[in-house]
Image (cartoon, rainbow over all chains, first blue to last red; front, side, top):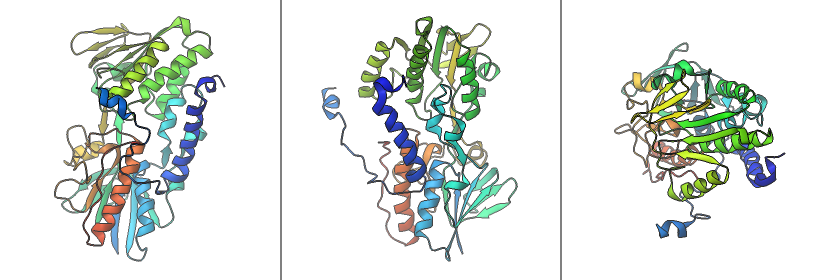
Length: 49
Length: 331
């Protein structure tokens, strides 16, 4: 459980992704538009460069 | 009966087979997917096997269980692809003609491409890009009680470019858990100019490495491995010593593509990066790690590419214009 102490969300995300991989991705399920999504991107950091 | 043939039943090929089966009438279209074996490895799980976090049961399944009914699954080694004859040949199941071909044969590591690497593999050099290698590394890590652990990327491109850094962070955690982190020096040696390929991520990951006391040695193009002296050498003469080396060997596309004369020298199939089609081959599409597209080699990329192929292949079959374009992103 030591791994979970400071990376709990990361660990849970990996478990969720594994489930999605086996049950949604390989099944060819449509999960959203294939175009690039900008949600969550740190555009402010890119503009500074 | 028209024939859709898919090469490779990994992530990309399985997704495409299942997508196309939903669209194509079973009385009109036969779908065949060909692969050399029936083992489907959850490759993101490889990274965690050496640390005992993932087990074989969790990440190793059969390919058949993910391929939907109505799709012929052929287990045989692919030996030739002939775009002119619209035909592929297998080692034990003969030849298959196609009306449409989807290729998703991926890439793999080649230790023999670096001087000294194949000879030292499994002795004091290990890897985690194949399941058997993960098991070897797990045993080696369990017996490692102190010294210098070097994680080295031989050259780009590689599958899942962030995985080597993840390995370094997991190693840091692993040695902390065992109470020996102060006896282990961790060095990340990379051909990149920094911790990662993208500047924003590099900034964040460099700080994380500093926090975890992981040294980064950038701009290191691996030339040779000297297992006797426990040293890796760069092409320009720089040496880094190690007690245990975790190596990410050069990645190559499928040898069959090279032998069939349809790839570049590294086995990657040249395609238009937006349509994912080879030049002048209107009934052939390629997705996943086996293309020469300048994007990450990752399942997430293959997933988004599959959506593009699905739309364009259906447009092709229906005689309509193909509008979908891949932008190569992973997330």
